[in-house]
Amino acid sequence: MKTLIIGPSWVGDMMMSQSLYRTLKQLHSNIEIDVMAPAWCQALLNKMPEVNQAIEMPIGHGKFGLTQRYRLGKSLRHNHYDQAIILPNSFKSALIPFFARIHQRTGWKGEMRYGLINDLRKLNKQAFPLMVQRYVALAYPKDQIHTAEQIPQPILWPKLKVSQTDINDTLTTFKINDNLPLIGFCPGAEFGPAKRWPDYHYAALGDMLVKQHAKIVIFGSDNDRQVGEKIIAQMTQGDQCINLAGKTKLEQAVNLIAACKAIVTNDSGLMHVAAALDRPLVALYGPSSPDFTPPLSDKAEVIRLITGYHKVRKGDAEQGYHQSLIDIKPETVFETLMKLIARCEKSH
Image (cartoon, rainbow, N blue to C red; front, side, top):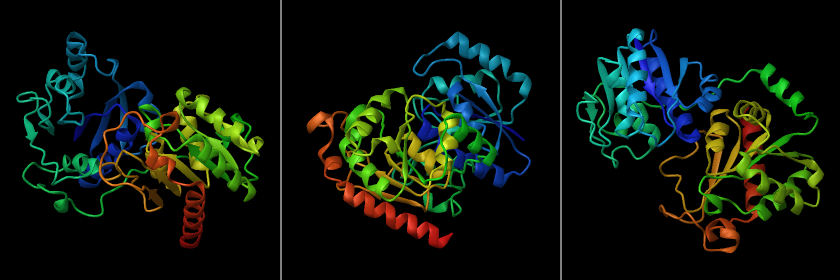
């Protein structure tokens, strides 16, 4: 049985989609899963044992590219896929499987996709409150799963596979010795400061952890390099903090997160990576809600001081931060993190 998945375009969503691949593999041991996704996703897909092949999606996010999609779909016909599962809800994302003449094309209704998707599901958002439930439900026949409660439990959470050799090689590449426990900070988040815990709070937490004989490693994209520099500048022991934001490829960041004793993170894609690596993590939420895309791990602690979802792209407090995140004190995060590490060590 050969299945083509049209994958999502964001790190967090791509991580959560692994629950679908794991479920499909559990249901059909002989299934062969190919995933079409942007080139940067290869680093994650390579660490998902369930994925047979990553196929690069060459068309940029948001571009229609009808002719290109037709050619791409036509080029896939020789693979003779039995089914396609389309995870994005856009009209254009359903075109390639249609052009590839894949017999069964499964997905949620989304943007008027009648015909393009012939195994069309109508989404009841209340019945499937979590994104991971919406992905996993697509592994089952249409008439079998109508609510999240009907999905066999437990849901198979994302689980990346990283070799110790890869971890050691990446530590060597960045000249990081592991004679001190590494604590990872992921201070970035999409859409700017409104979803970020303030840099000065990260700095204060960093100093507390250094006093506990830890070394801090900052992860993120090139956009997060500046915030990493701000954290180090505000630490009294900034020499015990390494800013790797913008310096690592995604695969290297995954390897190094796997080497960390624990992670402190905003609501971000790297939060989901850390969860899939089974790292103890403290996730800090403000206006965005963990009700839809929480970290999928029993080693995660969420700290949030408000309820509900707030569509805020720009915080109204200092430096664009959201007041609810400013109000999360470094002492609270430190205490939560210490208890979490102790609990994980005890259970281990």
